[in-house]
Structure formats: C-alpha cells, structure tokens
Image 1 (cartoon, rainbow, N blue to C red):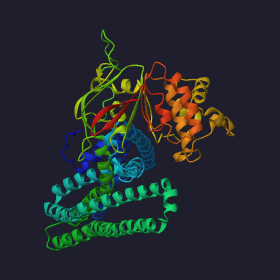
Image 2: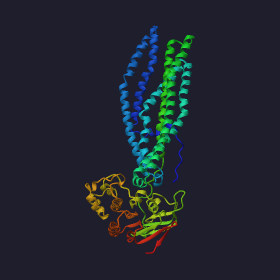
Image 3: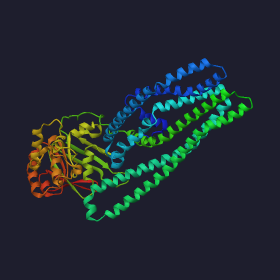
Length: 563
C-alpha cells in the first residue's frame, strides 16, 4: 500500500499537533493569562528599584507608592496561579488518556500488512512512554511558562529600546549566544533519544520472546546466549544514555551560564557609562534589571526548546503512526448485489499475489466454490494456504485479478460487512485475557449465556469448562498458558460457531486436538456446517473426509484432487 509522503514538520508544528489533542484547551489559556499577570509582577522589580533611587533623591516618591501598591496586588495573585497550574496538570492527564485511546483505535484500524511492520515493543512504547513524553512539555514547561517567557521577552525589549538602545544591543547579543550554541546540539540530542527509544523497543521485544519461547529456550539451553544478547543491548542503551547526559549537561550549563552572567555584565557596562556621565544611576538600575529579565526569558525559551526535544522525538513517533491511513472500513457497500443466477459463494478470478521481494503465491489462479459446500485446501508448507484465507478477509488485496464474495468484488465491499459474513479460526487462535464466557461471546456480543454454552457444546469444550472451579468465568491467562493448545482451538471454534456466519474459514483448526476429540468434533461438523460455505485448510484425513471437494495449491495455481 502506498502512502503519501508528508513534509517534515518543525518542532513547534509537531508539538502543537499534540497540544490540539488535549482536552479542555481553555484551561491552558486561562493558566497562561494568570501567568501573564504574575509576570507583570516580576517586571515591576526594576521599576521599584528605580523609584526607590528617585525617592532617595526626593524625586518620584508618589510614583514609588503607586508602584508598591500595584506590585503587591499582582504578587497577591500567586495562589490563583498555583490553582491554574493544578488545573492544567489535570487537563494534561485527561489528554494523555484520550491520546492513548486514539493511538490504540488507529493502531487497530491499520491495514493488516502495515500493522505487522512494527514490533510489539514499539506499539507498547507508543501507548506508554511515548504518550507520557510527548505531553511532558505541557506538564513541565506548560503553555503558561511559554506565555510568561514571551511576555518577559517583549516587555524587556520594549523598555530597553525606550531607555537605552546600547543596553538592548548588549542584551540581544547575550541572548543570541544563549540560544545559538545549544541549538547546534539539539539535533545530536534528538538522534540519541531516538536511538535509545529504538533499543528500548528491541529490549521489550526480547523480553516478550523470552516469555513466549520459554519452553524452547530451556530445551535448547539458550539461556546464556540470550542473556548475553540482552546484555549487549543494555550496554548500548547505557552508552547512549551517558552521551545524552553529557549533551544535556553542556546545554543546561551553557544556558545557566548565559542567564547568570547577563545582569553582572550589564551592570559593569552601565557603571562605565555612569562614570562617563552618559547614563543616570536610576537608568542603570532599570536597564540592568531588564537585561537580566531578557536573559531569563531567552533562557526559559532555550530550556523549553531543550526539554521539548524529549517530547519531540516521542511526538514524531506517535504522529508517524497516526498519519498512516487506516483500512477504510467505512468505505464500500454494506452488502452484496444479488443477480438472477446465484453466483458462487467464493470466486478467485485470475488472482495473483506476492509478498514484497518474494515469489508469487498465486499466479493468475482461478477457483469457484459453490454456496453451501465444504472445500478442503491442501499444499506444501509456504505455498500460501493461510494467505489465501487472509485475502478473503481483506487483510491483503490481490496484486492482479479479482476476488468476489457472492458475486461482489471484495475491494468494493465495506470491510465490516465482508468480515461479518465470515468466521475465521486460525491454527494459532488468539484468546484474550478475559473469561472463557467473554472469549466465546465475542463471536456474537449480543448472544446470551445459553447460546454461548450451546456453541461450546458443539465445539466439544463445554464438559472441560464445567470441570474448572470458576467454570465459564475462568480467566484466560496471558498467552493462554493455563489451557492446552487443543482446548484453545476448541474455544476458538466455539466462538466461530456462535458467530453463525455464512462463510467459515478454518486454518488447521484441529491440528492440536487428539484423534478421539477430533473425530467427535468432525462427526458433528457436517450438521453444524449445513448450508454454510466452508473453506478449510487441513491435512488430517478425518477433517478432509467431510469435504465435498479437495483443492491442492501448487506453483501458484489451484488443482482439484480426485477422491
């Protein structure tokens, strides 16, 4: 599937797209307004010092009094500012939850082939650490702090321009030095953060594999090799973290040095001007104070840019996922068009398909399966049998030719409608961490308990469930580790039976069953499948015995096998 290439976004464009997803953005703007009033109080400090000097020289004592009253009123807003910060943090937490729901919803709507390009560790990181980091700039360096820095910057430039352009030039030069050097290091910092996150994703994948392959690891005595492999990965993460800490220390140290040295340098330059008689003492106090405010504002903006690098790396990863187009499940028609003559239930019309960079699995293959018949599919390993079922589910689209369900091309069908017409049981059927009752009921969510249990009886799993202490309310463990492979397949079969779809797609659905249980299930399947179109992949004679026709997949073609 081809995706449109997006133009790379800048730092603020990326972070603004994350900010737009926050709930109740007015909370941020209200917090910013309160911070602006508090900032006005900070701006009063140099004015008060200037008024104090003038009052000592018996000039402007009335102005000093009014300045004190105004400053006290502004500083009295501090409790409201704290309240605004608390409300802002609460809004961020709600936004994080909403962002996680959006990521998961979009992740599950991705086309099947696109979805499988990313690892479990990467998806887990997107839903956990990345969402936290992408919104960290709102929690630590909120809109209010950014608003405050911009207000300080604008006010200090205005005052210095009015009272001493020379001091303004000095302040801007110091501000440029404070910003320019760290900006050179931001790309290095971002690359290190992305490298660390990528290796953390790999770490998560290795841990997941250690649990999933526990039996194989022990049987092949792979513990030392896997432990060493994981150790090498951890060492690389450690080395990147050390480099990142060094870059962070240089950036933070430079910003702090520039901020602390601004006002002393301004005082020294102003004292020289006062000594030469080109600047009054009260003007020196005022302008040096505002040079310090200018340095503080630029330092805050530099820190915002610095800290936003952590958010930026995670935000880009999130947006790279959200920018991928979904399956388009709401597109297409909601049913199939009926014609005068009943069309085949399933038709492959000169269909070709190949995975990228691999030989074709289907090469202009043709197949027509009449409605209400059971067809078996056999073939060598890797010939494309499982892929055939996934093509029918719309997980992939053929590169050539057309697949039709009851006469309608599947590319014109609504995907929910297409998948609603099919029930799928895979060889490694997935059960979720929920009760057995819920795992079966997800075949048809509106089904009642009686219907769920009837489906379990027909799949020959009811008696086993009844022996469990909690019966149908037994919770399936992660990876279905508390039940056998055969029990898992029968629960999945019960789910498909409950769905009662007109087309069943079965992929080695009895491969984990013992012969006795398989025979018991197969004896009932003919009645269960009555009137349904069934396409099943199987190799055991017992399963193939109920098939009306058997088709072999070979060299990209379908070949009918004589009975």
